[in-house]
Amino acid sequence: MFTGIVEELGTVEAVEEQGDAIRLTVRAETVLADAGLGDSIAVNGCCLTVAARTESTWTADVMQETLDKTSLHGVAPGDVVNLERAVTPQTRLGGHIVQGHVDGVGTVVRREPSEHWEVVEISLPAGLGRYLVDKGSITVDGVSLTVVEARDDSFTVSLIPETLARTTLGRRQPGGRVNLEADVLAKHVEKLLASRGGDR
Image (cartoon, rainbow, N blue to C red; front, side):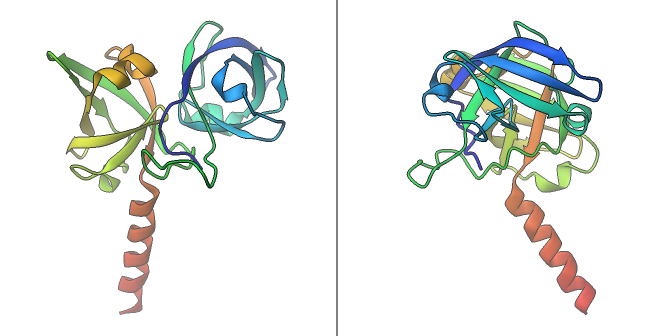
């Protein structure tokens, strides 16, 4: 489990093609401070498992299922990625509950800069809009954000200078693909309400 508070920007060091998978190596500092084999690290919001590490890099195996459903498909050496270690009992929950299980890939539609922040509109895959509400939470490339305006096929968020500077969202241009994870609490509520309706 994660909080959607990005700890650092890492750089893709290598991508080893393995047919129906890739072996992804990322250069990092902060997330390696206490990372061991088997630990979870979110890469652009996608939970991956540390399979190997050195003093300055860590490696994960990314299966075809993940490549098919996330923006990690097409990642290349030199790409910058958002990184976050899994939470611990002592971690502040600064964002919201994030599983690292990507629901779909959206696309940056437009960016509107202002003096102190930037409004970004992102498209939604079919069926994901039902989990979004104004002022609710969504994870974009692993970043916990508050929805400004929820629509059926897109949503907007306001990015503060800290988010623009410390995450990849500061450089994602229109047409750029981003991983999206809806609030898991909304999914549970939907299922509970559906089951109650079926009992009547």
